[in-house]
Amino acid sequence: MRSEFLTRSEPTQAAPADETTLEVDGQEVSFRSLDLVGPYTHEINDPNPDEDYQEWIVPVVWERTVDRESALREAGLFANQNSACRLRDEHTLNRVTEFFGVANRDRFAQTADSQ
Image (cartoon, rainbow, N blue to C red; front, side):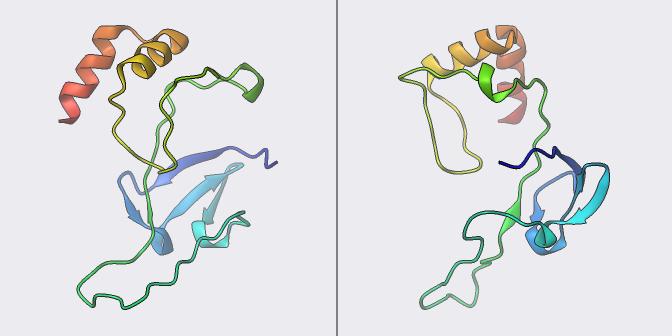
C-alpha cells in the first residue's frame, strides 16, 4: 500500500491526465510518471473521431480526513466505482455528514451552490 499523500497543485479544475502535475511528498510530479496500480489505458473499438477519449484528472480538496482504521464502514452506504459522481442517497449523506461533523446547513449550502 502506498503511503505518500497526493495533494492538488495544478490544475484547479478538471484537466487531461497527460497535462496534469501533482504534488507528491512536496515534489511536483507528472501524473503519467507515477507508478500507479491499475489499467490506466483503454482500448477503444471503432472510435468516433469527434469524441474526446482522453483520461481526465478531477481535483479533490479534502476538507476532513481520517486514517483507514477509523473509516466509516457500514452496510447500506452508497458506493460507486466511478471517481466522481453526485451523491444523492439520503441515508449515506446523513451518515457521512454526521461522521465528519459537517453541519447540515453547510452540506445543503454547498449542494445548492454547485447546481
